[in-house]
Figure 1 (cartoon, rainbow, N blue to C red):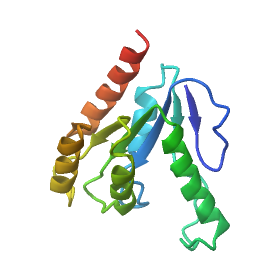
Figure 2 (cartoon, helix red, strand yellow):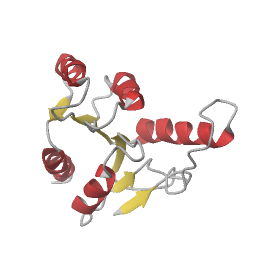
Figure 3 (cartoon, rainbow, N blue to C red):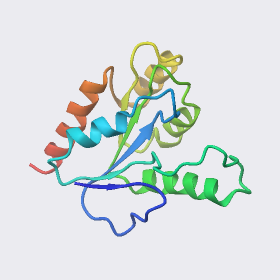
Length: 156
């Protein structure tokens, strides 16, 4: 397994690419990305994990900030190139960017969504997933199992 995080280049990465979109809000969101990485550790996937190790919370989230622009573009490029986009909506967060990304990639046929009970806009996420035929589960354990199953089905 290969794990690539920003700002590292992933364009030459080979294999099945899984992008981990979802809640990152530092201090609120669990590190669910690490759970997925651990669960898939014996596979040959390439995980694109946007949870940047050296994130600086003082960076202005504005188009004039090159670090911020680089992060956002890395995430969008990663989702464009991924074979599977995994989204997790942590109930302890608002996750507005993940909601935006759900809308952006709803027609991609590459989404796997986990929206547990307690997420403040679970009803909206449920309706979008149903309407656009997006695979959805309710728990992180189910998400891990489904991601592994999707990967294994692809390479059987």
